[in-house]
Image 1 (cartoon, helix red, strand yellow):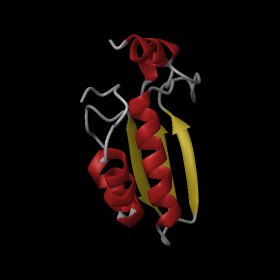
Image 2 (spheres, one colour):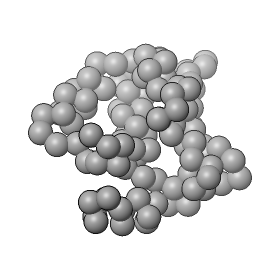
Image 3 (cartoon, helix red, strand yellow):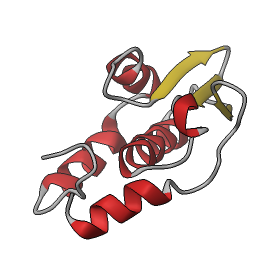
Image 4 (cartoon, helix red, strand yellow):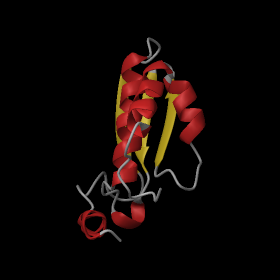
Length: 110
């Protein structure tokens, strides 16, 4: 499945169910520093930080980033060690909004 493809079949249910049982620290360990994940995550002193990491696109939301951001928020919401969530962006921008080029490619099947 391409990074931009929407999950189909039972895949999303399994992934979302997994998020419900995964601690935020485990989520952060799983995604942080991976080249194909445009999100950084950390937990310190009860503060969960999610950093949008697509500075070359002004941190605009494509399907991959949106999916990981949602999973991170779900893990943070279910983790009793998380007291606060901070969402920030890398580079000079927080988030430019939706990545319209990504949506166009997805709609055209590219």
